[in-house]
Image (cartoon, rainbow, N blue to C red; front, side, top):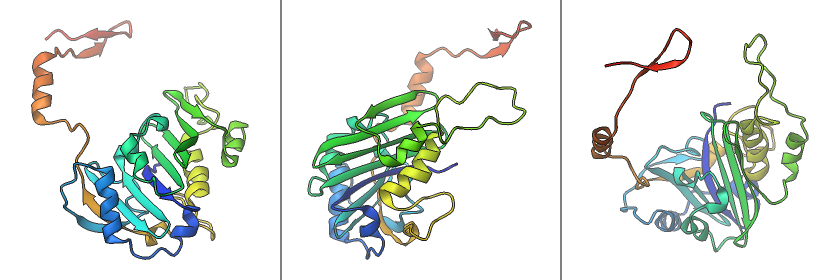
Length: 247
């Protein structure tokens, strides 16, 4: 389970129905979407891509597509710990659509979050990872979640592993996010075995846009941090505890 996603969908119907045979994205409408969601965008574009490859774009990049009945935005700025606190400009960008769907997950931390808004009202929000537990849990769990909360998908312990501590959650967040939520909400998966009913995310074309990175860390910031902070290196002492290294 190594998949990552950062996608926001504005839609008038089920995404699978609207994206299954989606035409090329409308350039003018897609540009307008980027303008609404990235106010600092300078008007430059880059090579197009597809939903499968760019559902988790690099920082400083956004991939988007506006199609009949649905708009797709892939952008790391949608990855908020608490989906209920999604920046207003991102939520309002889809005010002309009936439903907004957020799907975000990161395999490094086993974090997954999703949310659904209907006509501007938050219906469901879930965010969780094994390190932080359940960060946000608002609304009634959807049907695809229920077997996971019921304990039907426990995380097995690794045979022979010295760590016998049970997994911190009753299921793996990426299994819920990738195998269940992504397929149920958007109609496809990015990892695992596809079903005949899944749409081909690789066939959904998107346009690419270099966008400003929120609060980017500059070299000057790094130098100032080093100047104003004391650094201490540690090693393990004879008793097994960490001890500072005398420089």
